[in-house]
Length: 167
Image (cartoon, rainbow, N blue to C red; front, side):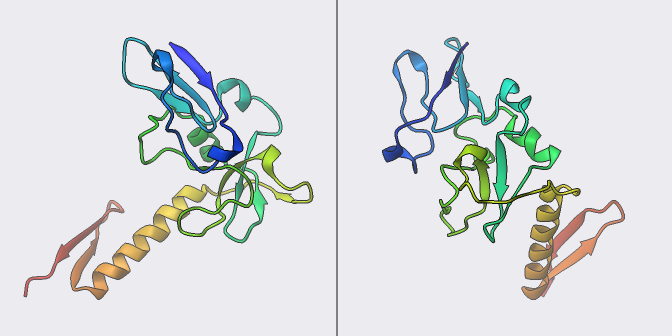
């Protein structure tokens, strides 16, 4: 297996991972890409196992309001997980503090060295932020379903069932 750790020039900063190199390697804007010559299943991680051991942790999270915080342990695991470059659930990392995503949000994971020097970094949240995001998303879906004529059933096991009401 070959591993490529690549950072393209600034002119390519908004491109995620596109350039296929000779010998079956893939160039990635950040992170580590591994590609076995016997398989077409390329995987990469944002934070390698060696980088994960460093203190402070190399990545932080930029909130919607521009404040910055340390990562919850579940977020660290997420950045250390192997992903296919074509996986829609792969982590989104910012090229710099100021970069906004396609929705105009400044929020996202950012390498610590790319923060402005005067930025204060808050402590990591005690509760897992991904759980509260899931709950907020579910609440929006339930509200939308109820407003649009769906029956919403909250099951004893904590799951939710939604079905269109019979007319």
